[in-house]
Image (tube, rainbow, N blue to C red; front, side, top):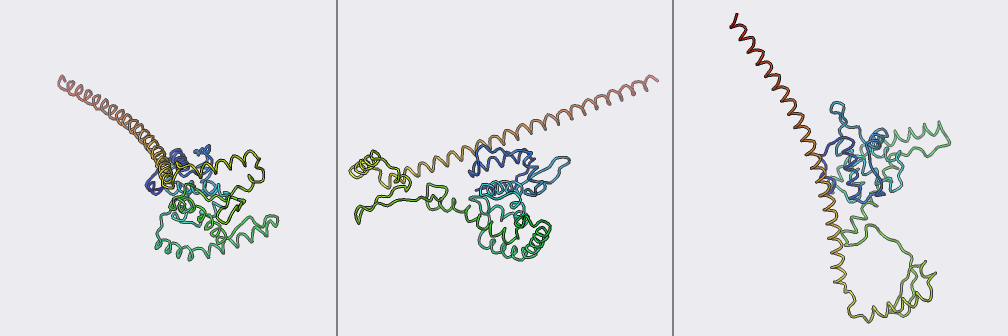
Length: 304
């Protein structure tokens, strides 16, 4: 189960920043040194990237919607989207559509997708006209910046292209690939016979030295004659072991996060219990004082 397991999550800005950090690491989105914080949460709310939180007294309470908006935003930033365009896109997107922007996530089946698409198509024409009209007004006001506003349909096309990119990692996993993305390489092919072709990186082939060429020849000879070379089955076993190790690392990371959450919940519960205890002790002292006062009044009435 992916990020959908957080659908009932709620918390303050600090808790949101911590949870976003966990999922960014888990999804391998962006620079590992990036640290979400409360200030950035509030900044994203001000920029209309995150929906405004609910209020509980003076405290702002965030939930699943803000969580996926934050994570999707960071993924789109990595793909080159400016914050202003992400904000515009989120204004016309459903929660399901935003979830689908997160690599490896999809919460719609085919029938739900058709319903969502039907609703979107019935909803977006007016939005298209509004944004186009707004763009025309801005172009009249400032001819030096004609490309500052995009129509909703343009944003949708760009987002559809982005969604296609985010599918790559998940599709490669289903194919059994060891890579998280497609690697494009330029190779030079040396066809030595009708049955023999040697492929080499194009740039490496240009700068290869005599010593390296000789070593390649020896390596090929050793590989052809070595009876102990890894078989395809050996490679598959090794690849599976690497996957299991990676899965264990993810599980350890998840358990550490759950452990931290349990510790924080425990500390919060202890604070609440201590606070409740103080209230009860205070009430007990007040009751004792009242009982004492009543007893003194009763004794005085008896003497009188």
